[in-house]
Amino acid sequence: MTTTHGKVSAAALALLLTASASALGAGSAAAADGTVQLPVLSARLDADAACTAGSGVRATDVPWEQVSLQLTRTWPFASGAGVTVGVVDTGVSASAPALKGRVSTVGDAGTDCVGHGTFVAGLVGAAVADGVRFAGVAQQARILAVRGSDARGAVTAERVADGIRAAVDGGAKVVTVSAALAANTPTLRAAVALAAKKDVLLIAAAVPDTPATATSATDSPPARDYYPAADDGVLSVLDVDVDGKRPTGAYTTDSASIAAPGDGVVGIGPKKAGHYIGSGASLAAGFVAGAAALVRSVHPDLTAARTASLLRSSAYPADVPRLDPYAAVTSVLTSASAPAAAAPASPVHLPADKAAGPLRRALWPASAGLAVIIAVVWLGLILPRGRRLGWKPSVRTEGAENTVAVEPAVPAGAGTPLEG
Image (cartoon, rainbow, N blue to C red; front, side):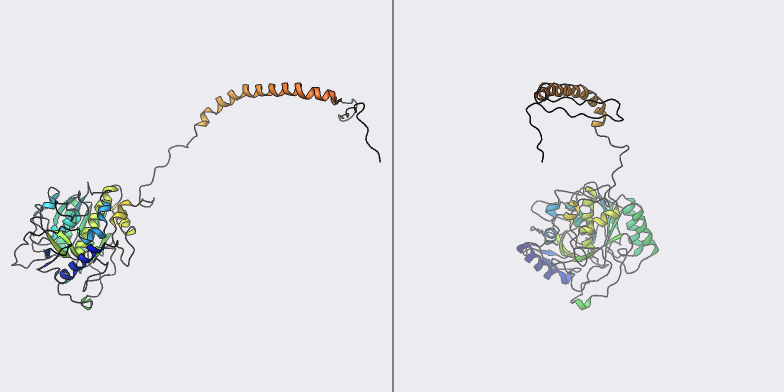
Protein backbone atom coordinates (compact mmCIF):
# COMPACT_ATOMS: atom_id res chain seq x y z
CA MET A 1 0.00 0.00 0.00
CA THR A 2 1.37 3.36 -0.97
CA THR A 3 2.52 5.52 1.94
CA THR A 4 0.44 8.70 2.33
CA HIS A 5 1.93 12.11 2.89
CA GLY A 6 2.21 13.32 6.45
CA LYS A 7 -0.89 15.48 6.64
CA VAL A 8 -3.29 12.87 5.30
CA SER A 9 -1.72 10.03 7.30
CA ALA A 10 -1.84 11.88 10.61
CA ALA A 11 -5.37 13.13 10.03
CA ALA A 12 -6.59 9.70 9.00
CA LEU A 13 -5.03 8.11 12.08
CA ALA A 14 -6.89 10.59 14.26
CA LEU A 15 -10.05 9.64 12.37
CA LEU A 16 -9.50 5.96 13.11
CA LEU A 17 -8.92 6.50 16.82
CA THR A 18 -12.25 8.27 17.18
CA ALA A 19 -14.27 6.04 14.87
CA SER A 20 -13.18 2.45 15.41
CA ALA A 21 -14.86 1.90 18.75
CA SER A 22 -18.28 2.91 17.41
CA ALA A 23 -18.13 1.76 13.81
CA LEU A 24 -21.59 0.19 13.95
CA GLY A 25 -23.29 2.46 16.43
CA ALA A 26 -24.43 6.03 16.69
CA GLY A 27 -21.96 8.85 17.18
CA SER A 28 -19.54 10.93 15.18
CA ALA A 29 -15.92 10.85 14.16
CA ALA A 30 -13.35 13.25 12.80
CA ALA A 31 -13.18 13.52 9.03
CA ALA A 32 -10.03 13.22 7.02
CA ASP A 33 -8.98 16.80 7.69
CA GLY A 34 -9.12 16.24 11.46
CA THR A 35 -11.54 19.13 12.05
CA VAL A 36 -14.95 17.98 10.75
CA GLN A 37 -17.03 15.55 12.80
CA LEU A 38 -18.86 13.03 10.62
CA PRO A 39 -21.67 10.77 11.82
CA VAL A 40 -20.82 7.07 12.08
CA LEU A 41 -22.70 4.73 9.79
CA SER A 42 -24.83 1.90 11.19
CA ALA A 43 -24.99 -1.43 9.40
CA ARG A 44 -28.30 -2.41 10.99
CA LEU A 45 -31.14 -0.61 12.73
CA ASP A 46 -33.27 -1.70 15.65
CA ALA A 47 -36.91 -2.30 14.93
CA ASP A 48 -38.01 0.95 16.58
CA ALA A 49 -35.14 3.11 15.29
CA ALA A 50 -35.74 5.90 12.80
CA CYS A 51 -34.29 5.61 9.32
CA THR A 52 -30.86 7.10 8.83
CA ALA A 53 -31.07 10.81 8.23
CA GLY A 54 -28.88 12.45 5.65
CA SER A 55 -25.66 13.98 6.88
CA GLY A 56 -25.31 17.74 6.64
CA VAL A 57 -21.55 17.63 7.19
CA ARG A 58 -19.16 17.15 4.29
CA ALA A 59 -15.57 15.96 4.27
CA THR A 60 -13.62 18.37 2.10
CA ASP A 61 -10.14 16.84 2.36
CA VAL A 62 -8.92 13.78 0.44
CA PRO A 63 -9.74 10.63 2.44
CA TRP A 64 -6.75 8.46 3.31
CA GLU A 65 -8.18 5.50 1.43
CA GLN A 66 -8.20 7.39 -1.88
CA VAL A 67 -4.56 8.34 -1.39
CA SER A 68 -3.70 4.77 -0.45
CA LEU A 69 -5.39 3.36 -3.54
CA GLN A 70 -3.76 5.96 -5.86
CA LEU A 71 -7.12 6.72 -7.43
CA THR A 72 -6.03 10.03 -8.96
CA ARG A 73 -3.36 8.12 -10.92
CA THR A 74 -5.86 5.47 -11.95
CA TRP A 75 -8.72 7.63 -13.26
CA PRO A 76 -6.95 8.85 -16.42
CA PHE A 77 -6.85 5.21 -17.60
CA ALA A 78 -10.31 3.93 -16.65
CA SER A 79 -13.70 5.17 -15.47
CA GLY A 80 -15.93 2.11 -15.20
CA ALA A 81 -18.06 3.27 -18.13
CA GLY A 82 -20.21 0.52 -19.58
CA VAL A 83 -20.07 -1.70 -16.47
CA THR A 84 -22.97 -2.29 -14.08
CA VAL A 85 -22.14 -3.15 -10.47
CA GLY A 86 -24.77 -4.92 -8.42
CA VAL A 87 -24.85 -3.94 -4.72
CA VAL A 88 -26.51 -6.65 -2.62
CA ASP A 89 -27.14 -4.84 0.66
CA THR A 90 -29.81 -2.75 2.39
CA GLY A 91 -30.78 -1.04 -0.87
CA VAL A 92 -29.32 2.02 -2.57
CA SER A 93 -31.01 5.39 -2.42
CA ALA A 94 -31.75 6.43 -5.99
CA SER A 95 -31.91 10.04 -4.78
CA ALA A 96 -28.36 10.14 -3.41
CA PRO A 97 -26.80 13.19 -5.15
CA ALA A 98 -23.42 11.56 -5.83
CA LEU A 99 -25.12 8.66 -7.68
CA LYS A 100 -27.75 10.69 -9.51
CA GLY A 101 -28.84 9.21 -12.83
CA ARG A 102 -26.78 6.01 -12.49
CA VAL A 103 -28.89 3.87 -10.14
CA SER A 104 -31.34 1.23 -11.34
CA THR A 105 -33.25 -0.89 -8.85
CA VAL A 106 -34.76 -4.32 -8.33
CA GLY A 107 -38.09 -4.13 -6.52
CA ASP A 108 -38.08 -1.67 -3.63
CA ALA A 109 -34.27 -1.55 -3.38
CA GLY A 110 -34.28 2.08 -4.53
CA THR A 111 -34.92 3.15 -0.94
CA ASP A 112 -32.42 2.64 1.86
CA CYS A 113 -33.58 3.13 5.42
CA VAL A 114 -30.30 1.94 6.94
CA GLY A 115 -27.96 3.74 4.55
CA HIS A 116 -25.34 0.98 4.43
CA GLY A 117 -26.04 -0.08 0.84
CA THR A 118 -25.88 3.54 -0.32
CA PHE A 119 -22.54 3.95 1.48
CA VAL A 120 -21.12 0.89 -0.32
CA ALA A 121 -22.48 2.07 -3.66
CA GLY A 122 -20.76 5.41 -3.08
CA LEU A 123 -17.43 3.67 -2.55
CA VAL A 124 -18.00 1.85 -5.82
CA GLY A 125 -18.89 4.86 -7.93
CA ALA A 126 -19.80 8.17 -6.26
CA ALA A 127 -19.11 11.19 -8.47
CA VAL A 128 -17.11 14.20 -7.32
CA ALA A 129 -19.19 17.12 -6.04
CA ASP A 130 -18.22 20.79 -5.87
CA GLY A 131 -16.04 21.50 -2.86
CA VAL A 132 -15.65 17.78 -2.06
CA ARG A 133 -12.63 15.66 -2.94
CA PHE A 134 -14.19 12.34 -1.93
CA ALA A 135 -15.17 10.12 -4.85
CA GLY A 136 -15.93 6.51 -5.64
CA VAL A 137 -13.52 4.23 -7.48
CA ALA A 138 -15.44 3.89 -10.77
CA GLN A 139 -17.27 7.16 -11.26
CA GLN A 140 -18.98 6.24 -14.53
CA ALA A 141 -20.10 2.75 -13.56
CA ARG A 142 -23.81 2.13 -13.18
CA ILE A 143 -25.23 0.81 -9.90
CA LEU A 144 -27.87 -1.91 -9.69
CA ALA A 145 -29.52 -1.73 -6.27
CA VAL A 146 -30.60 -5.13 -4.91
CA ARG A 147 -32.01 -5.83 -1.47
CA GLY A 148 -30.04 -8.58 0.30
CA SER A 149 -31.60 -7.94 3.72
CA ASP A 150 -34.82 -6.73 5.19
CA ALA A 151 -35.50 -3.00 5.45
CA ARG A 152 -33.62 -2.85 8.77
CA GLY A 153 -30.51 -4.69 7.62
CA ALA A 154 -31.19 -8.20 8.97
CA VAL A 155 -29.82 -10.84 6.60
CA THR A 156 -30.46 -14.50 5.90
CA ALA A 157 -28.88 -16.89 3.43
CA GLU A 158 -32.08 -16.97 1.39
CA ARG A 159 -32.27 -13.18 1.12
CA VAL A 160 -28.63 -12.96 0.08
CA ALA A 161 -29.05 -15.74 -2.49
CA ASP A 162 -32.13 -14.03 -3.93
CA GLY A 163 -30.16 -10.78 -4.14
CA ILE A 164 -27.26 -12.41 -6.01
CA ARG A 165 -29.62 -14.01 -8.52
CA ALA A 166 -31.47 -10.73 -9.03
CA ALA A 167 -28.21 -8.86 -9.65
CA VAL A 168 -27.03 -11.47 -12.17
CA ASP A 169 -30.39 -11.47 -13.96
CA GLY A 170 -30.35 -7.65 -13.95
CA GLY A 171 -27.22 -7.52 -16.10
CA ALA A 172 -24.53 -6.73 -13.52
CA LYS A 173 -21.00 -7.76 -14.53
CA VAL A 174 -19.67 -7.22 -11.00
CA VAL A 175 -21.63 -7.93 -7.81
CA THR A 176 -20.59 -7.02 -4.28
CA VAL A 177 -22.20 -8.77 -1.31
CA SER A 178 -21.91 -7.14 2.11
CA ALA A 179 -23.22 -10.04 4.18
CA ALA A 180 -20.86 -12.63 5.69
CA LEU A 181 -22.86 -15.61 6.94
CA ALA A 182 -21.66 -18.28 9.35
CA ALA A 183 -23.37 -21.12 7.47
CA ASN A 184 -23.60 -22.03 3.80
CA THR A 185 -26.78 -23.35 2.17
CA PRO A 186 -27.63 -25.11 -1.10
CA THR A 187 -29.57 -22.02 -2.18
CA LEU A 188 -26.58 -19.77 -1.60
CA ARG A 189 -24.24 -22.17 -3.41
CA ALA A 190 -26.64 -22.28 -6.36
CA ALA A 191 -26.66 -18.47 -6.58
CA VAL A 192 -22.85 -18.39 -6.57
CA ALA A 193 -22.77 -21.04 -9.31
CA LEU A 194 -25.21 -18.98 -11.39
CA ALA A 195 -22.93 -15.95 -11.18
CA ALA A 196 -19.98 -18.02 -12.38
CA LYS A 197 -22.02 -19.49 -15.23
CA LYS A 198 -23.05 -16.01 -16.39
CA ASP A 199 -19.46 -14.68 -16.18
CA VAL A 200 -20.31 -12.31 -13.33
CA LEU A 201 -17.52 -11.47 -10.87
CA LEU A 202 -18.86 -12.04 -7.37
CA ILE A 203 -17.10 -10.12 -4.57
CA ALA A 204 -17.99 -10.57 -0.91
CA ALA A 205 -16.92 -9.51 2.57
CA ALA A 206 -14.64 -12.24 3.91
CA VAL A 207 -15.83 -11.65 7.49
CA PRO A 208 -18.65 -9.84 9.26
CA ASP A 209 -18.03 -6.21 10.13
CA THR A 210 -16.11 -5.58 13.35
CA PRO A 211 -18.27 -5.83 16.49
CA ALA A 212 -18.97 -2.47 18.14
CA THR A 213 -18.15 -3.95 21.56
CA ALA A 214 -14.61 -5.10 20.66
CA THR A 215 -12.01 -3.39 22.84
CA SER A 216 -8.88 -5.54 22.35
CA ALA A 217 -7.33 -8.14 20.10
CA THR A 218 -8.33 -10.85 22.59
CA ASP A 219 -11.97 -10.14 21.70
CA SER A 220 -11.41 -11.44 18.16
CA PRO A 221 -13.33 -14.65 17.46
CA PRO A 222 -11.28 -17.61 16.15
CA ALA A 223 -10.56 -17.70 12.43
CA ARG A 224 -13.18 -19.42 10.32
CA ASP A 225 -14.87 -19.26 6.92
CA TYR A 226 -17.90 -17.13 6.13
CA TYR A 227 -20.24 -17.29 3.17
CA PRO A 228 -20.68 -16.61 0.31
CA ALA A 229 -17.07 -15.32 0.44
CA ALA A 230 -15.58 -18.76 1.14
CA ASP A 231 -17.31 -20.40 -1.85
CA ASP A 232 -15.25 -21.29 -4.91
CA GLY A 233 -15.16 -18.52 -7.50
CA VAL A 234 -15.91 -15.70 -5.05
CA LEU A 235 -13.33 -12.93 -4.50
CA SER A 236 -13.32 -12.55 -0.70
CA VAL A 237 -12.17 -9.27 0.83
CA LEU A 238 -10.70 -8.32 4.22
CA ASP A 239 -10.62 -4.78 5.60
CA VAL A 240 -7.44 -2.98 6.70
CA ASP A 241 -6.71 0.38 8.28
CA VAL A 242 -4.43 3.23 7.22
CA ASP A 243 -1.38 1.21 8.32
CA GLY A 244 -2.46 -1.91 6.44
CA LYS A 245 -3.48 -3.72 9.66
CA ARG A 246 -6.70 -5.37 10.76
CA PRO A 247 -8.91 -3.49 13.24
CA THR A 248 -8.81 -4.40 16.91
CA GLY A 249 -11.20 -7.22 17.75
CA ALA A 250 -12.03 -7.94 14.09
CA TYR A 251 -13.34 -11.24 12.84
CA THR A 252 -10.69 -13.30 11.06
CA THR A 253 -10.45 -15.96 8.37
CA ASP A 254 -7.74 -17.93 6.61
CA SER A 255 -9.40 -17.88 3.19
CA ALA A 256 -9.43 -14.20 2.15
CA SER A 257 -8.33 -13.40 -1.41
CA ILE A 258 -7.48 -9.70 -1.14
CA ALA A 259 -7.55 -6.78 1.32
CA ALA A 260 -8.68 -3.18 0.88
CA PRO A 261 -9.28 -0.07 3.03
CA GLY A 262 -12.21 -0.57 5.36
CA ASP A 263 -11.47 0.84 8.80
CA GLY A 264 -12.59 4.45 9.22
CA VAL A 265 -13.43 5.27 5.60
CA VAL A 266 -15.51 8.18 4.30
CA GLY A 267 -18.70 7.61 2.32
CA ILE A 268 -22.05 9.06 1.31
CA GLY A 269 -25.45 8.71 2.95
CA PRO A 270 -28.94 7.99 1.57
CA LYS A 271 -29.97 11.64 1.71
CA LYS A 272 -28.39 15.07 1.32
CA ALA A 273 -24.83 15.66 0.16
CA GLY A 274 -23.03 15.03 3.46
CA HIS A 275 -20.75 12.18 4.48
CA TYR A 276 -20.44 9.42 7.05
CA ILE A 277 -17.65 7.35 8.58
CA GLY A 278 -17.84 3.57 8.36
CA SER A 279 -15.79 0.44 9.03
CA GLY A 280 -15.91 -3.20 8.00
CA ALA A 281 -15.03 -5.77 5.38
CA SER A 282 -18.30 -4.98 3.61
CA LEU A 283 -16.91 -1.53 2.82
CA ALA A 284 -13.58 -2.96 1.67
CA ALA A 285 -15.54 -5.17 -0.73
CA GLY A 286 -17.06 -2.00 -2.21
CA PHE A 287 -13.60 -0.68 -3.08
CA VAL A 288 -12.67 -3.97 -4.74
CA ALA A 289 -15.94 -3.97 -6.70
CA GLY A 290 -15.14 -0.48 -7.98
CA ALA A 291 -11.66 -1.62 -9.04
CA ALA A 292 -13.18 -4.64 -10.80
CA ALA A 293 -15.48 -2.28 -12.71
CA LEU A 294 -12.45 -0.29 -13.85
CA VAL A 295 -10.70 -3.43 -15.08
CA ARG A 296 -13.77 -4.76 -16.89
CA SER A 297 -14.32 -1.36 -18.55
CA VAL A 298 -10.74 -1.35 -19.87
CA HIS A 299 -10.73 -5.06 -20.78
CA PRO A 300 -14.33 -5.94 -21.70
CA ASP A 301 -13.27 -9.30 -23.12
CA LEU A 302 -11.61 -10.39 -19.88
CA THR A 303 -13.61 -13.07 -18.07
CA ALA A 304 -14.75 -12.74 -14.48
CA ALA A 305 -12.21 -15.32 -13.33
CA ARG A 306 -9.37 -13.59 -15.12
CA THR A 307 -10.45 -10.21 -13.77
CA ALA A 308 -10.24 -11.63 -10.25
CA SER A 309 -6.84 -13.13 -11.04
CA LEU A 310 -5.58 -9.77 -12.35
CA LEU A 311 -6.76 -7.95 -9.22
CA ARG A 312 -4.90 -10.47 -7.04
CA SER A 313 -1.72 -10.67 -9.09
CA SER A 314 -1.37 -6.89 -9.32
CA ALA A 315 -2.06 -6.32 -5.61
CA TYR A 316 0.54 -5.04 -3.17
CA PRO A 317 2.34 -8.07 -1.68
CA ALA A 318 1.37 -8.80 1.92
CA ASP A 319 0.01 -11.68 4.02
CA VAL A 320 -3.27 -10.88 2.29
CA PRO A 321 -2.43 -8.95 -0.91
CA ARG A 322 -3.69 -5.36 -0.79
CA LEU A 323 -5.74 -3.92 -3.61
CA ASP A 324 -3.88 -1.73 -6.13
CA PRO A 325 -6.34 -0.41 -8.76
CA TYR A 326 -3.65 1.54 -10.62
CA ALA A 327 -1.50 -1.56 -11.11
CA ALA A 328 -4.52 -3.64 -12.14
CA VAL A 329 -5.70 -1.14 -14.74
CA THR A 330 -2.27 -0.40 -16.22
CA SER A 331 -0.92 -3.97 -16.20
CA VAL A 332 0.14 -5.37 -19.56
CA LEU A 333 -1.85 -8.54 -20.03
CA THR A 334 0.02 -11.75 -20.74
CA SER A 335 -1.12 -14.53 -23.03
CA ALA A 336 -2.63 -16.23 -19.99
CA SER A 337 -4.98 -13.30 -19.31
CA ALA A 338 -5.68 -11.95 -22.78
CA PRO A 339 -7.50 -13.54 -25.73
CA ALA A 340 -5.11 -15.52 -27.91
CA ALA A 341 -4.17 -14.00 -31.25
CA ALA A 342 -5.55 -15.76 -34.31
CA ALA A 343 -3.05 -17.85 -36.28
CA PRO A 344 -2.24 -16.69 -39.84
CA ALA A 345 -4.55 -18.26 -42.41
CA SER A 346 -1.66 -19.00 -44.81
CA PRO A 347 2.15 -18.90 -44.80
CA VAL A 348 3.70 -15.46 -44.98
CA HIS A 349 5.70 -14.69 -48.15
CA LEU A 350 8.23 -11.93 -48.48
CA PRO A 351 7.43 -9.35 -51.21
CA ALA A 352 10.74 -10.17 -52.96
CA ASP A 353 9.47 -13.63 -53.89
CA LYS A 354 7.13 -12.28 -56.57
CA ALA A 355 9.84 -10.14 -58.19
CA ALA A 356 12.54 -12.81 -58.17
CA GLY A 357 11.95 -14.01 -61.78
CA PRO A 358 11.95 -10.55 -63.46
CA LEU A 359 14.94 -9.53 -61.39
CA ARG A 360 16.98 -12.53 -62.59
CA ARG A 361 16.04 -11.83 -66.22
CA ALA A 362 17.08 -8.20 -65.86
CA LEU A 363 20.50 -9.23 -64.49
CA TRP A 364 21.46 -11.39 -67.52
CA PRO A 365 22.26 -8.47 -69.91
CA ALA A 366 24.21 -6.68 -67.20
CA SER A 367 26.24 -9.82 -66.52
CA ALA A 368 27.02 -10.28 -70.22
CA GLY A 369 28.16 -6.67 -70.54
CA LEU A 370 30.46 -7.05 -67.57
CA ALA A 371 32.05 -10.15 -69.15
CA VAL A 372 32.77 -8.23 -72.38
CA ILE A 373 34.46 -5.45 -70.43
CA ILE A 374 36.68 -7.95 -68.60
CA ALA A 375 37.64 -9.64 -71.88
CA VAL A 376 38.61 -6.34 -73.49
CA VAL A 377 40.76 -5.38 -70.51
CA TRP A 378 42.44 -8.77 -70.56
CA LEU A 379 43.19 -8.57 -74.29
CA GLY A 380 44.44 -5.01 -74.10
CA LEU A 381 46.69 -5.36 -71.06
CA ILE A 382 47.61 -8.95 -70.39
CA LEU A 383 48.38 -10.27 -73.89
CA PRO A 384 50.88 -7.51 -74.94
CA ARG A 385 52.78 -7.99 -71.69
CA GLY A 386 52.90 -11.73 -72.24
CA ARG A 387 54.33 -11.32 -75.74
CA ARG A 388 57.08 -9.07 -74.45
CA LEU A 389 58.06 -11.77 -71.99
CA GLY A 390 58.10 -14.48 -74.66
CA TRP A 391 54.97 -16.17 -73.33
CA LYS A 392 53.37 -18.80 -75.60
CA PRO A 393 50.20 -20.74 -75.07
CA SER A 394 50.36 -24.32 -73.94
CA VAL A 395 50.41 -26.90 -76.75
CA ARG A 396 49.23 -30.45 -76.79
CA THR A 397 51.33 -33.40 -78.06
CA GLU A 398 49.50 -35.97 -80.00
CA GLY A 399 49.67 -39.68 -79.40
CA ALA A 400 50.11 -39.49 -75.69
CA GLU A 401 47.56 -41.11 -73.45
CA ASN A 402 47.02 -37.79 -71.73
CA THR A 403 47.37 -34.23 -72.86
CA VAL A 404 50.71 -32.80 -71.77
CA ALA A 405 51.47 -29.13 -71.28
CA VAL A 406 54.75 -27.95 -72.82
CA GLU A 407 56.58 -25.24 -70.94
CA PRO A 408 57.17 -22.04 -72.90
CA ALA A 409 60.75 -21.35 -74.16
CA VAL A 410 62.92 -19.11 -72.07
CA PRO A 411 63.41 -15.77 -73.76
CA ALA A 412 66.93 -15.00 -75.06
CA GLY A 413 68.99 -13.15 -72.55
CA ALA A 414 66.77 -14.10 -69.67
CA GLY A 415 69.51 -16.23 -68.10
CA THR A 416 69.74 -19.88 -67.16
CA PRO A 417 69.21 -21.64 -63.86
CA LEU A 418 72.22 -21.98 -61.62
CA GLU A 419 73.55 -25.45 -61.14
CA GLY A 420 75.12 -26.59 -58.03
